[in-house]
Amino acid sequence: MEIIKDFYKRRQPHKFFYAKEMKVRSRAYGEEVHREFTDWQSYFFEKRKAYGDRFVLSELEDLFGYELQSEMGLDKALSPLCLEGTRFELRPDGYISVRGRRSGLHVGKEIKAGALFHIPEERETVSGLAVIGKPDGSDEMKLSVYYWRKGDFEKQSFDSVPLAPTLDASSHLFCLGRHIFLIHNSVLDYYYINTEENRLERVAIGEDGDNETFDWCKFVSPCLVTNGKGDVFWISDQDVYTFPIGYPRKLATIKNNKIEKPLHLFGTEDGVVIYRKQRGTDTVVCAKYKKAGSGRYLAQLTSTDE
Image 1 (cartoon, one colour):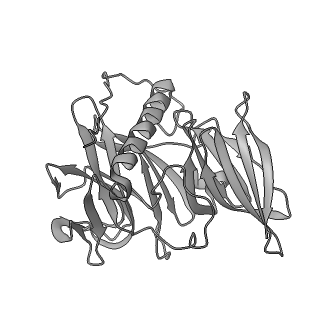
Image 2: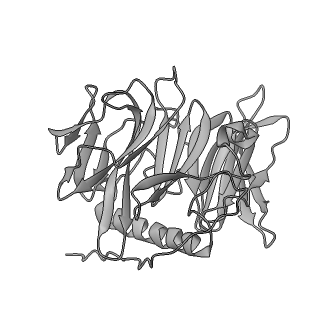
C-alpha cells in the first residue's frame, strides 16, 4: 500500500506594508509565494498519482491541461469534483452532494461554477469549496468560499466578493493552492486565499487596478493552465498571456499573427504548447514555447494537423 505524504509549509506571521498609492493590495507577491506554489504543484501531482480521477479539484483536472481533443468544447464548469476519494457534486437545487448524499450546505441559486481548494499548512491541510452563484439571502452574484472541516462543510462562507451580473449559463473557477482564478462574463479575475485572516484578497494582474479594465483580462477563453516553472497561461482575444505566480506584475505576451487565432493551451515542464487555427480553414498549427532568460517565451517547434 502506497503511503501518501503531506507536506506542511511553515508559515511565520508577517506584517505587510503597502505603498500608500497602491490600489489593489494582497499578499500574493514575492519569491516565498512563488516557491510555495511550485511546492503545491508537486504536492498536487503526488495526490493525482495516488488517487487518479479520485482527486479532481476543478474542471482543470490536470494543472498542465491536455493536448487538443475533439471533446474539449464540452462545458465542465459544474462537473463533479473529488477530494482524496470523496466525491462532491453541485446539485441543481443549490445543495452540495457528498458521496452521493445531500449535505447540509446550500450555496444558493443560479450556480455558475465550483472548485475545491486544498492547501497544506503547518498544522493541518486546509480544504474547502469556492462557488460562483447567488448565496442564500442575496440577489447579487458572488464568489463565495466555504471551509471543509471534519468531514463536512461549514454552513456559512468565510468570505465572499461581489461579481457582475451575467446571462451566461456558466462561469469557470480554478483553485491553484491559495490562488483562485475565475472567468466570469469572459473576464479573468484573480483572488488570493488569506487563511490567516479568513478572507479573499483581490490580486491585480499586470498593473495596479481593476482586472476587468485591462485588455489582457477581457474576452478570455475558458482555458487556463500552468507549467513546471510556476507560470499561469490564458487566451485573451487574439493573444496568449502569462505571469509567474508570486509576480503578477510580470505580465508577458505571446503575440499572435493576423491569420491565426489561439484555440487551446497545455503546459509543459519548461513552457507551453499553443494550438492555433488558421482563419478560413480547418488547419490547426501547434507550437511549443520555452521560457528564455529574459522571461519571454520563444517558439521552439511547429507542426500542422489537417
